Length: 139
View 1 (tube, rainbow, N blue to C red):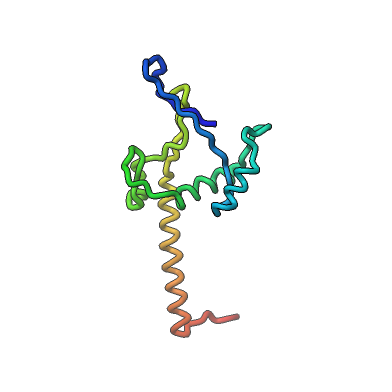
View 2 (cartoon, rainbow, N blue to C red):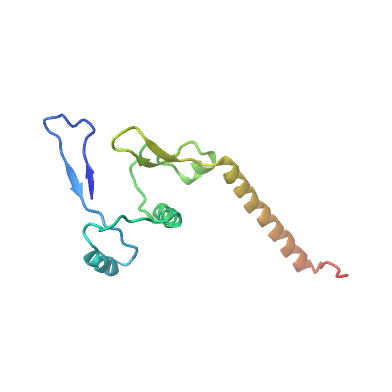
């Protein structure tokens, strides 16, 4: 259950928005409807997702999510990713100013990019050797 409201609660016209969210793992609409119908309204015990489940969910949402047309504070284009000027707001506390942001790691980003180029160069080098008939001597 998710409840969203304004942070300033002492107003004459405060609007409350109460929504229900159910997590389904299926992609097909028919299967999702069956899973939602079979699922409990409120879990009887706490649900715990492993790190890899959370990581996979985040990656799939980034790759398969709808492309939002509207700009916002944390939106970026793929060309901006190597420069890591902006971060991703992953979680914000409703009670305080606590926040968790996903930050880019320049060491991993640049080493990963360099390794892709290095692997591509080695692949081209070995394919050219094979095409020209150059083989290492066996002892």
